[in-house]
Image (cartoon, rainbow over all chains, first blue to last red; front, side, top):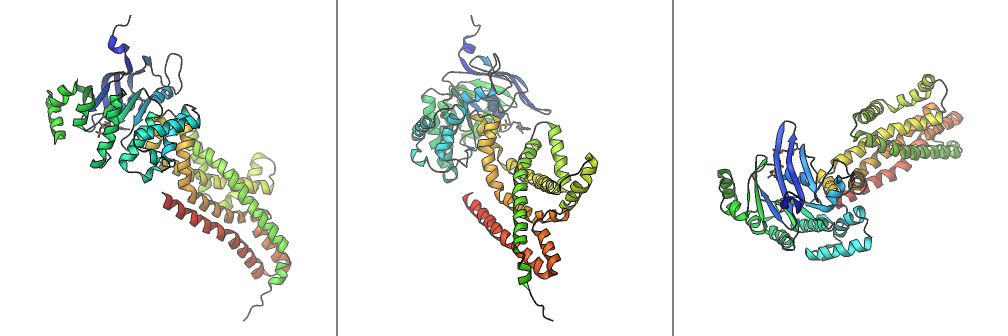
Amino acid sequence: MTMNNHTDASVIEAIALRKSYGTHDVLKGLDLSLTRGEVVALIGPSGSGKSTFIRCLNMLEIPTEGTIRFRQKKVGDRFRDNGEEIGIGTLRRHVGMVFQHFNLFPHKTVLQNVTEGPIIVCKTSKREAEERAMDLLAQVGLAEKHAAYPNHLSGGQKQRVAIARALAMQPEVLLLDEVTSALDPELVGEVLAVIRRLAEEGMTMAIVTHEMAFAADVANRVLFLDQGVIAEAGSANDVILNPQNPRLQAFVARFRG
Amino acid sequence: MTYNWDFHSVWQFYDLFLYGLWISVLYTIGSIFFGVIIGFATCAARLSRWWMFRTIARIYQEIFRCTPLLVQLLWFYYAFPLLVGGSIDNRVAGMLTLSLYVGAFYAEIFRGGIVSIDRGQREAAAAIGMSPWQSMTRIILPQALKRVLPSFINQSVIQFKNTSLVSVISVADLAYMAAVVNGQTYRPLESYTVMAALYILMLLPLTQAADWIERRLRVSD
Ligand SMILES: Nc1ncnc2c1ncn2[C@@H]1O[C@H](COP(=O)(O)OP(=O)(O)OP(=O)(O)O)[C@@H](O)[C@H]1O
Ligand SMILES: [Mg+2]
């Protein structure tokens, strides 16, 4: 018997997560559990620890204390699986991430950016990887750009390639850290549309964003991070549309413009 | 006063010049080859997480970057054998010193290239599950090496010129052979002018090629 249904269904979980840089405590004990198909939005002021938190979920930052669990198994501190513990490499293979600044590989074409993971990490055959990549590129509306190099693309196109690159690994969870913040305003929509469709298709996602309307729209749950703790959590309706916490009220008011 | 140029008597010994040139090329290519290996190893040590490796690599680099190559050659040929009790072949000493010397510079060039790559690249590679080795060889190094190619070529051109110093430990390179021809002909002006011309002949195409590559890389960035 499991004690807790919620935990049982979780794909990825953070338990009592702490992260310090020297004496600076950035995360002061956070818990989060993502169930399959759930979309969680993380909002909060600059420096509240949103990026640090989401980067702990795929171990790009190693937590100072606390645990990450993936498929109900503890993630260890080694790259490879180690007994009962899941390796960091395994975790990352199944948990995709999209970055604010895209981080596409500039020396590879759009197609190669997308096939790199499957071919090198998953040892998929080149043919199969390319077929799947072309499929994904078509889904993000960039099939005709497959032979281009990243610096010939607009910001919005780059970010859509980055999403395709993450999806090519067939991830169970997708982490998105302010993926529209570096874009010109007129390019934000095309990227949000892709994410919205992923949400509809049931992709499990943790999304750090300053787009309040978007968060309210796609997220099943919204967390307000403030000074390293989850200061408020609930439905979009509660957190964004009817905030109670005064700091949250001030924060949301600022982004409503 | 007019000087009576007489290249003819000097050029009788063209085979000595060509042999010397061949030796210079050989030492250049050889020391670049070993230097690249040493450079990569040193660079890896410099970027290692263990301070022992970092320190040893750093000490090696500073010793070879902060002493003149001439001094290094003299030391390895005359002093080193006394230290270990034996003797060292002048050709071995020459190749060894040249390789260690250029390796120290290559290591710095490689390291500079690697650390100049945005850390987002490493993170993106890690985020799709690549191991540190995969990320280094497939993502970081290709970009870093492309970026430092002009400096690498530049250092290698300098290396060609540096090989002339092995003549002081009697390795029969181009500079040494020019001295030999001079000894035979008593024609220093011609002997050393031919030597200089041969160096220019070899190096001019290389520096031109380096400039061309640098311009092309800048365009493609
Ligand atoms: N590598 C690091 N070394 C030291 N301090 C760091 C490091 N990374 C983050 N921090 C600090 O941790 C705090 C939280 O940073 P984080 O990037 O997680 O905030 P954020 O909520 O994502 O902010 P933003 O909205 O500006 O992106 C900040 O005060 C930052 O200065
Ligand atoms: Mg951030």
